[in-house]
Image 1 (cartoon, rainbow, N blue to C red):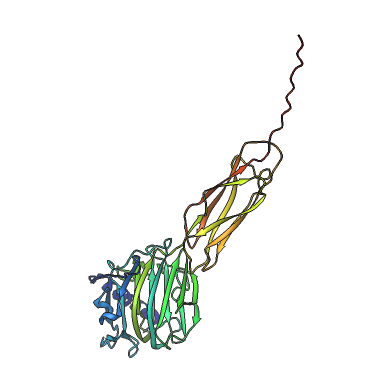
Image 2: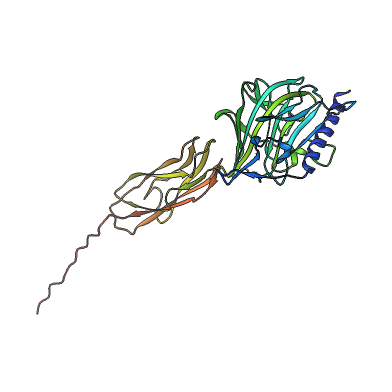
Length: 370
């Protein structure tokens, strides 16, 4: 079969797979008692497969005689998805739309997935037997591809669409592993049992043109787990699956109003995150005039504060330029803007320079005679 025809057939069947999954009715959503913003999508301790909880499962074979060998069974304490025996099979689970929380890049979110890849075979270096597709409400995200010895990302829009992009060597077969896929802003981070593995920019896959009306890469807040190619297969053990939303840190000034005695010429001011983040967060700052003037009353300053993973605060140096002239108290301000991988909270601090000069007046009294 010509390559072009294979691509068209693959496109049709992949779109069919995703469209069928998304048309099935949702069953139920389980919320974790530990965190109100964590949705437990699959609880493997319940003794059922994902499609008996918050997922929909579809398996098909595009090649005559269309016999499907792919299977999904529960074997305590995991679900076993097997598409290894016949590479032509497509099989996987998509979260039903009503069970999935809205995934926004600005607020940030985290997919937690317990997984072990037992075996994997592929006959194309741009395909994998098990994939994880996670998309935001505005269709940004990543598709992770799992091999036995590597986890990598499918490239997004452009000439290299669906080709092998950045990857990390990792033994995915050794044991059940807690994978966490974190997305904040324009960046993703993948960890394995808490160890950072892979990071990079979010992608869109909207250049892909299916022949059916439903495009799996244009479904907002999408999560798919499975084999979506006819050129690879795998046996996978799937444990708990959950989504935690609102994980982006908020950047704020420590105080909104500060009095600085003019005698204190050097000091620092603190900018805080409300919680630690697994990603590096940055924010731009600028000191600007009020009634105080840069170069006369204080030293102008601007730049970028960088919060590395785990840090909660950064400081800005403030320099005052005292004089000996009596004058009213004067003000200047700090403005925060352009946060990356976080949210902007209280963004302005006003500094009041408290004058310390005392006026000296000489009073001349006229000599009065009678």
